Length: 239
Image (tube, rainbow, N blue to C red):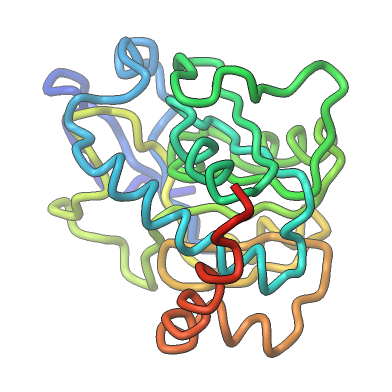
């Protein structure tokens, strides 16, 4: 990787950012400031947390239905307060949550035990916090017995974003790794999975083949709106 710029993190640390031409990965130097950055697991500057969870649930309803896995078991990695899990359980999905750094408030009785296995993992706003995403995902796949994960992280295309890109989050110091779609495709290949891009921030890794119809519904905004109406009616009594 080659150094491409430096920036002040947490208003005090001069941090270098490095880029790989081969994979398209952009990341900071070794993040020595993380203990300070995570003095609070969820930053008080993150005022979009509730909105994102509500939006994620809407997308997940469609994805789960299109993949015909509504009766499966799910785990939200780094699930924060457990809000996403609570919202999904309210809709009848057998979802659990785990987060080593944050108190589980909304889904306290739905945490995995030592031998817990699932069908699908969720990881929302997680990958940009990881120093080594390949190791993290490999460990999670092995631990929970699955190779399917639905996740979010905002990607960029081709040119390295300018310093005014809001996703760098220089003031919090928590975002340390940034991806292009080709980066995610490269990681998926290393994991023995296929990468499906739903949009610039919603993605799937899986070792299962998705049909053309499934991909069309979950990646096309028009189809999503139509199907979401049907799906909400269908699952109204499943909580």
